[in-house]
Length: 293
Ligand code: KIV
Image (cartoon, rainbow, N blue to C red; front, top):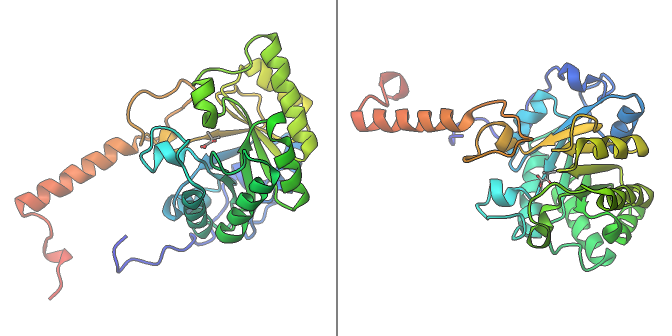
């Protein structure tokens, strides 16, 4: 954006894509709510969620009709240059969540509670979530863990803050868990099912299932009345999420198997940057039509 381009405001209201029409109840002039998402499950409708970390990208996804945007702590790896999600701070999460909220007018924006901002207990969780709601304007927060985060989920929900839980691979525990499929084997599968029900009973409105065998994710999805949001958890989840830098082809290196790449933005951006550089060096940009007299 140049200093002369339009202010970064939410995109003008455009037709909502067919895939999201039902979620908006046919209207495109209000934000999606957690009640819409639970109602979608009752109707058997699936919905998409993407991550976003800035106002510009968020406005593109809002214009595309993506009904839920997650300001994931994947911002650590995808946006801030950290190796994992662990270093992400609540200040960083608050600032980028506020940008995503400013870039949208229709999507429900979910802010991730970063590592260290809720593990101490419910009071710490409430303090952190309150910042995301009041300072950034998010409509819901996400936290990792089932039974281990129950007290936090209960207090947040009782306080009026919708909570999305996150089970299976929980990247904030990478130092104890590593990056591998979770819930394989009877004992682990039963534990995950228990955790899922506990999260629902504590009041969570949705549940992310990351890197979980498809059969187990299907069973969890059938057992709950709240929607499951799968990532590497097979096709039977009620919703699907992808990290936007992966699915847009911005991330370099080998992609996990569960990622489908829908665009090749990295290659396009590299080409555009090279072309610009060559034209500047060669004196062919700017031309007359780019100049003022
Ligand atoms: O931080 C994130 O992007 C996430 C998704 C992978 C669900 O937690």
